[in-house]
Length: 533
Image 1 (cartoon, rainbow, N blue to C red):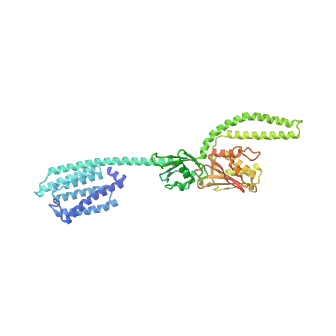
Image 2 (image 1 turned 45 degrees about the vertical axis):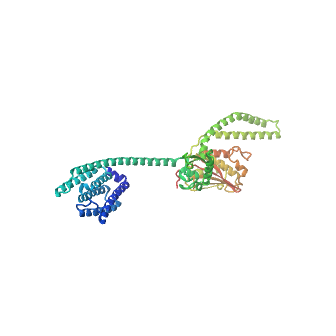
Image 3 (image 1 turned 30 degrees about the vertical axis):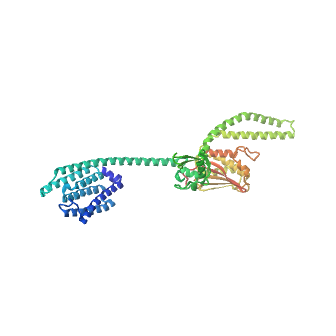
């Protein structure tokens, strides 16, 4: 089982160990051959049979060279190679020991090393087999010496002790190999666990809604997840590149944070993205200066979470306004109607009464708009095909406004594009934008709708384009503020409510372009995971 483990679990390590063992064999035999060719073979090497010693040494050297190539190609299989090499080692060393002074020549130590190497390289019962073969060879050689020649006398005690040494070496090698096997198995198990944990952590980081970026001490990106790429508008995975080359806006805020670490939160708008992104920085290691973790959050999602708190407060405010203002306002309106019906009121007074009634209706409309915000339920976004929905919306709007069909045009690429938003709230947003466009647009078509998917962020968008005179810079600064309007009949809440509705759906509404030829309002919808192609 152990040799199976070595040859299958860690093939590279086991074959490399076998190469080192063969290198030891080559160095020993090369030393013997070199001494033979130099003619300075020291005693007692080859003292009884120099020719046999020389032949075995040369064959043993050739064997070690040949084995080096066999090990390189790993043929035959590992277990067979170990067993064959150790048996050849025992045979070759035994013959050289016989050609020398027998046990007194010191070749017994080489046999011990051969048995130990075989025990470690292929642990198990075969290690005991190596020890038994070596012990039998040594004992048999002593018996042969006693039967074939008279000098030197056999030393059975030395042979017995050497045999015991073989078995002890095999047993210790077996124990050592088992411990190594157990340690390697534990290390392998821990490595698998760590690899699984690393993959799990990577999946968690990649699927997080928050963007994550890790910088090294040279301000290079070491890790970036999918959300961070989407928020920054990056088309590909970026690793080991300087932050300043990838996101210059983020790099500027990072440098500010390095000099003033008390400021930990910033809001940026990357050039490649239409999103407002909240950025925060923290150090990964207090002892190092530059290894930094960057968190990116979509401001729209943060605003959505704050929306519920704001709506709750606004609901209480609206209820208070309705209670405190509605009743006096109703009394004023009723009194105005009674005055208008009085015969004693002249023409000039009728004009004043008309003004009172108009302003009463306007205040009432403002109250209703505020109550509409407070009564609005939470958004229930749905994924649907924008083309089918937009066809129905255009038909309804043309019928209500009594427009010709050519008054509105639209372009959707791709036509089967999906968006994710509450359909009823999208209807309200688009209705407000369309009414504004129809009010200021000149010439056909009055309104153009354009839908597409932004390549950098893979987020769908819808543009509402008019052909009016554009919006002045003074108005642009306060465009989405509540109650701000240049229209004497307007409440100034249309665009404000539209933006609030978009943010409640994790979408965004912005003035995308503005010129003397008209303006374009863009709705950026949340990212849709799967767009049909």
